[in-house]
Amino acid sequence: MAAHFGRLRKGATTTAVAAVAVAALSASQAPGVTTDDLGRQAAGAAQPSGDANTGGAGGGATGDSPYYTDLPPLKSPNPSPSASPATGTPVSVGEAEAGIPATVLDAYKKAEAELRASKPGCNLPWQLLAAIGKVESGQARGGRVDASGTTYSPILGPKLDGNGFALIADTDNGAYDGDPAYDRAVGPMQFIPSTWAWAGRDGNGDGKKDPNNVYDAALAAGHYLCRFDRDLSVQSQMNAAILNYNNSTAYLNTVLSWLEYYRKGTHEVPDGTGTLPSNSSNSHPGASPSPSTPAPSTPSTPSTPGTSKPGTPKPGSGGSTSPTPKPPAPSSPAPSPTPPTPTQTVDHLEDANTGKLTATAGSAFGAKVAVRAESKASKGVAKIRVRFTIIGDTDATFTGGESVATVVTGSTGTATAPALVAGEKTGDFTVRATVVGRVLGGLDYTATVTPRQADTLTRTSDTALTCVPGGEFADQVELKATYKGAVAGKVAATATLIKSADDATENDKGPYFKDADGKTIRTLTDLTTDADGVLKLPKLYADDATGTFLLRVNTTGGAVLTVELKVAAAAS
Image (cartoon, rainbow, N blue to C red; front, side):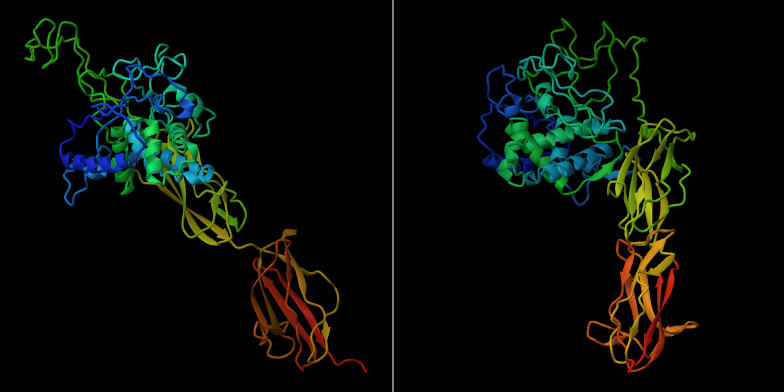
């Protein structure tokens, strides 16, 4: 579609100049595309629906629907401030534009991670999905999505009826777009139904492929861009993928501008507070704007029959734009304020009877972290997303091996994190619970991983351990550790040749071990039982002293075993 640069935001002129440079570079690298004087794909007035699965010139993913032409601002050392929609705190224009709603940002990053695993050669950056999401729907209308990532109302492009747009007759009986006559682009990534039918994905694991769900749409867009074994780290292949999405060089240049901007840095903002674009590619004479164009405009006071808005020509007035002196009828309804989302009603998190978080290394924690999202009136808030994050020097994870888990609150406002599984690192770490899409204080929980333990040690053989002076013991000492009757694997142990049963200090004579250099040592540390709880000590040697000597082995958890070693001259 045509890019319309005549109504750029104040202060974006320099950005537009920069975008022209980007455009020139991009166009030189992109496949040949014929466009008209408005930057649209040059084709007949009616474009066929085409075989969307081929990715040919039949309208791409969006059917060449309109898109937002706003360009990113240039960051300056002293940007002019504007109020944050979340807190009212002044932030720079650049900072506001770089903010991406939390759930939408999460969807882009999860799609990138999935493509990294399923199509590693594609090298899809999540910032590309963010750039396309920006120009297609203003990041799902500034993040107006629920806890599962579904938009509160469908995002629909105009009818693709050939009147200023491509002509694509209905392909879904109105199932996705509600229009049984013509197709319309649907959702935050603006897929036409015929493309979604084969490209749709289930990105949030709810068993459905919904083009109005940002997780589903982002994953579908990622797969769409990665078709034909493309490597998006190669600029020409990235250009081809973007043009395949919407076949317009102006569209390509706009997406590339946002991609470069997001690569320089972004941050998460609360859902529903993202910056909305204002300029659309169908904002030119002859275009037929639709009231269901993806992102909403600022509500205006509706007029009643027989009245006109100031600046609007009255029928039969010859086109005069003078304000009408007649005021709106008293019964004219005032615009309804947008109701807050469930996420916006959350005031704080409360603990929901989380138990003591302790576990032995390698085992699951018996308790789970549970929190309750509450409003100012301390009522539970359902269907909001709570993020649980493991913080600290630990290898503990949630079930499944992840260090971050997101859970939707139930009807009582409670969210319970997946079970924690301890790793091998012992000590304390933190589990932090926060509300996704809100700047609120979180709740921190301390979790402790204790060392593996054994309460019993036994020898695996009852053979007497004997040696002659200056010789070596024929048998090595082998032990087995258990804890409460079960095998105690990977338990730390220490072995020391002691002076006597009452004196556990290291002996200075009698049997000994050898270190790697062959030197005498009588204490072994950093020993560990194997997975079967077995500990086999190195070979023992004897000096010239004779008599009965003692070897004592201790484990974490308190298991102790003392073994007799006898050194005597050989019988004549």
